[in-house]
Amino acid sequence: GEAIGKVDASDAAEGVAATVVTWAATSELVNDPANNVLLSCASDGSIRLWDGAGALRAKTIEMSSAGSHADIGAGAAGHEIRAACFLGGASAAFATAGSGNAMRVYDTATLAESARINENLREADHGLFSNCCLAAHPTDANLLLAGGGQTVHVWDLRANRSVRHFFSTTVRGEALSISPDGRTAVTGSIRSKSPLQLWDVASGEVISDVRG
Image (cartoon, rainbow, N blue to C red; front, side, top):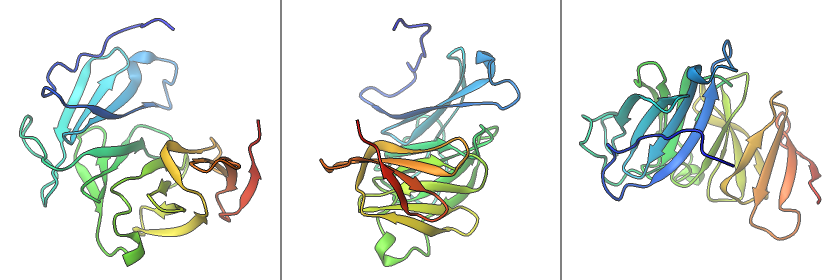
């Protein structure tokens, strides 16, 4: 329970809150802290990548309008990142989503935006990315996405659409995860009865409730 190091975010603007933090380890050197990657996102739309020792590797700022990046320090008014995850169980790429109602995919090495998903959505999916949580499938291009409604989507990044969904669960916060083999998902909902459930990712069917 003791601190082992300090991450210096003193370059952040005053009053800017950290909204998402997540780790990804490189597959080749998974036990070497110096080769781990920490992703942090903030309420001003800024994205920072750190190494395992807490040293800043790179930084960019998401834009709320047509552009994908701004000069460091320019800010991103109105765009708060609320969810992020590394893709494919590694650290080569990551996705973010937030108040701009878009999901963006970035290359970790360059911080270049490689995809933006906010067009050609069904009417029912409008607002889906504004208040959601993300969980990447460990081996393919799919990720799980839970928005504000009672649905968890299996989102295919290649096809830019939901290919399956789990219905009748209202996920809040970061209460969404997927097993290392990619077959089972767990959700935590706001309801008082059976808030934790296991799901079959391939079929979208409930496997069981998790009982204490």
